Length: 506
Image 1 (cartoon, rainbow, N blue to C red):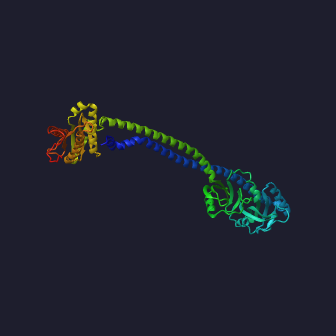
Image 2: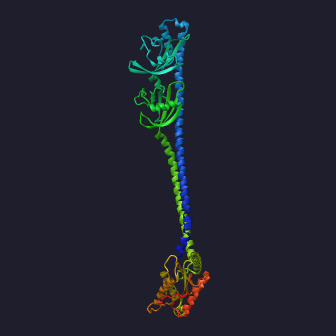
């Protein structure tokens, strides 16, 4: 059998692990790099999202502050107008004089369209606009009815529209209840043109691709930057689900698709304190993804280079270990191989026969050992020279290898012209037949006058199930040796069994 094959069968698993350990380690390192990249990807996507939220919140805080201050100034006008008109000295003045006082107040605030004071029934009592009022009865308006009920304390804001010189004009109406001596005396209203209010958003830098939307609690958009119609998309309704999400808390963020432009956006919102308004900043998701992809591209490239370097290193180390293992295997092969014949040497024979003997004893199985000796080898060597002798030994080794072909069989050269065969799980009769094939092969060479010099063989066989059974490896080998001596003494060119067994020696 091949000694290398047997070693591989006995130590193959550990050698495989040892050879491929660098590759396994490098693959593990690559897996760790990829896992780190994945965690890095998640971390930086969250970081990019948090950064977008922080930028949107910063914009919202600035705009909300501006809106709060603007509406606070509108409410201050109402308070001032109510205080002025309730003054006893001014209350006695003619209505047109009172109207002029209101007009002077409006001049100080460029975005205010007008101030109107309504009677308890909703008709116009005073107006900052001289001449005939655009509308003389506001009794059916939301901003009037809410103040009449008395349930509201403070200002009320509503969306309002009316016909102007250039068509329908949208306004924001802010009203306050007028009370004197505990009695309802009417409602003061300030009207702000929406287009003037929208102008406040013009100079706000919201970043490329972002949107800024001011939404009323009713679900209507007051203004949007940028707008689709160029007029702030006033009156466009927010979907009920989005409105409910905005009204659920005073501030927050969420991902959704914009109904106005169909883009996936990160929406960050905040309520304007004390007013029924919500400010929403929408950042395109692809803008967030672009920054994230840029970071991941850099990290991914570095990871790919690292994995490539690790792979190259792992396979180079594996190649070096393969070379080392092959060199060690070659040395191991040489240490247990007879250099001349290629069969196992005496050291290997001793290892295998001891191992197989223990196994045969443990399993109560067969183990046969054959000892072979070349007949008249010294005479052949002296007559034809050492080269012919070496060729004869190689011829014997070839005959042994061609007959003992099982993986478990072992042919060995014990020294000089003496050979041995270890035959596990082989009865004495089967061992005899195998040995006879070897003997007849050499006999044919020896008696061939046209062939190279050769010699016949004598052989002795001993088995573990001989009677009496050998008690040790040494006893087994000695029994085979004694059988060999009997073959020599009986005339050579024959095979003898250690135990008495009738076998045809044809």
